[in-house]
Length: 363
Image (cartoon, rainbow, N blue to C red; front, side, top):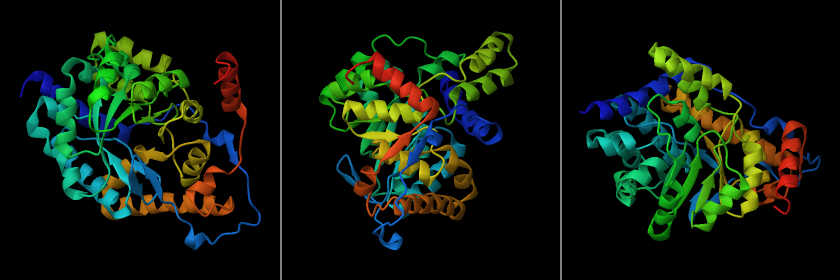
């Protein structure tokens, strides 16, 4: 295996280890500023609440989505296997981590394809970076989808992470054009996915305008790639990386908070996946009220997945029960009912939304 291929694979394992060992959550996604209107006389039975949702033509038993985490190193195979079994068990969707490692080295394909083996009927999302799309074209996009027989392809945007990586891709020229070319003739739905810095309404409109099927907001306030790359830079002990470690701290609060990004993308008028700092079923309910279709979780599921099926299933069931309680307390028998619930947004989140509305009048 070439040095570049080994490096890409090893970096995947670094990311998981750092997520487990270090505090990698930074910022505020804004969910604490969102208060749902309580219904003192809910006309529904909590035991009969239905959390099913339809997204991109597929039916899900709940809006919980297992967000992209890993793959690309032999030690990640079993994690993806466990996550896939949970997706099948709960009737929910799942995304895999960036498939670049396996596209560079086909020997690693089974660290991703195991997902489809374990969840043959689940909604599975492939994953490719926009820089790799620009550099390798639709061939890599097609290979990523074929590798796991994916139902959709996420093109991830991670330029903050790239800017802070010693080996990062710092040239974004031509990426939007590559995305437009992909959407114009690709048979698999394309989801544009941020990875922790959020997406604005203007950017969402540009993406929907060229044919993107959905947007995963990947807002600020959850797992921070600034923090992760800062740890990697410090661990390298290389003098040339010392500046990158401090830059991670400088940009720790960079990005659009998740709640703000959900509202922004919802204004653009297309399907929305809310990820970034969702840490409870109540957060999921808040995201749905604000306009999300699915709610992605990654970090809260990683440690339970490493512990095994029982731990992961208990964790997911707890989140889903919290969602059902939130629905019950708003008198929502279905997710469609929940979407009509009134929400009050306060604090810094409200101030940011009002400031954006004033700047982009008419959105």
